[in-house]
Image (cartoon, rainbow, N blue to C red; front, top):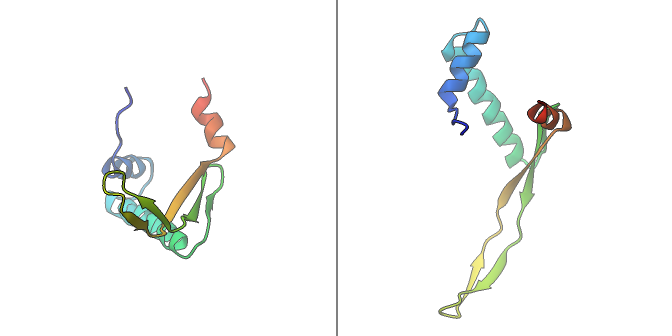
Length: 96
């Protein structure tokens, strides 16, 4: 069974492969994620070549009826995220 890799594990692995300290790597990774989140909030699509594309998608406001009480409830619209991996990444994941 695959194990989970947490952020600190990623920071350590990147620091070991580069000449950067763990502190520097953490700052860089945090800046990358912050930039991605800000771009998605602004409605922009984020493409990282040969890796993935992340698109913000606005869901519509909708109403539903509760089964037991028959009351109508409104679910407000919200922004969701759609992630598409690149063909290159998919090939690398599936190579034997």
